[in-house]
Image 1 (cartoon, one colour):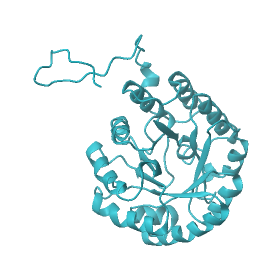
Image 2 (image 1 turned 120 degrees about the vertical axis):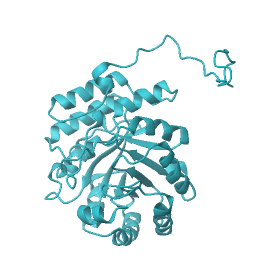
Image 3 (image 1 turned 60 degrees about the vertical axis):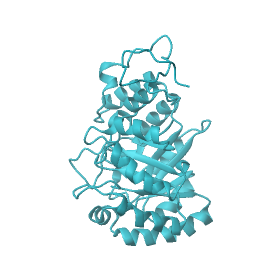
Image 4 (image 1 turned 135 degrees about the vertical axis):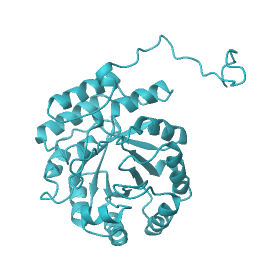
Length: 315
C-alpha cells in the first residue's frame, strides 16, 4: 500500500511553524519509510502565511531513493513556482462545493475547470505533472452529501481537459465505505486505479475504516496526515485533519498489507510533532501498537453456518 503524507501541507497551512521544523518533520518521516509527500502549497502568502516558505522547504529536502514531492497550486503563478522549485507534481485546487470554491480561490467550480484547462497546456511546456483535487467530493462543508450523479459531469470534464491524475477528497468526513464505493465506481470508468489518490478525513471517526475499504478496492494511493493533524484557513475552528498516518499504517499491516513503514518511528515523530506545539489526534501513539505476533496468522475462510469449524487456509 502506498501512503502519501500530506501533513507538511495540511498541518502547516493552519498551524504556522518555523521552516526548520518542517524540514525536520520531513526528514523524520523519510526515516520512517515515507516516500510520497504533499510538501506544501504555492499559493498567496497573504492568504496562507503558514506556507509562504514553500520554495525554501522544497530546496531543503534531501534526495532519497523513490522520493516524490508534490504540492498544491491554484493558478499559473503557483504552477510556475512549483516547477521552478523542482516539484514532481502539482495538484490544482478544484472544489466540488461552489461556496467553498469561491471562498478558497475566488472562482466557481466551472471557472476553476476553465482555469485548469488552460494550466494543462502550461504544465506540458514546463515538464511538470499536473493533477487535480476534487475537494468535498462526497459532500460538505455545509451542504448535503454528494453522490455519483454529482461527480460524473466533473469526471467527464476532467478527462476532456486531459487531466487524469485525481485526488478525490472526502474533506469533511461525510463518507463511510459504501459511499466510497459509489463514487469510486464512477472514477473507475474514467481513470485507472494508479491515477487515483483518495484523501479521507477523520472528522466523524470514519477514517481508518475508510482506509481499509480503499485498500480492498485497490486504490493506488491513500493520503494520510501524521497524528491526524491539519486544518484549513477558510474553515477556522473546524477539525480539518487527515486520517492519522500511524493509525492507518497499523490497521493496514494488521490487515495483511505491506506499507514499508516503521510504526515505532511514526509514533515517535507524531509525539514529537505534538510536543512542538502542533495539535494532533490519533490512538496508537497514546496506547501503543498492537503487540506483534511471532508469525503472521494464516488467512482462513470462515463459515457463518459453522463458526466453530476450523476451516482450511484460503488459497
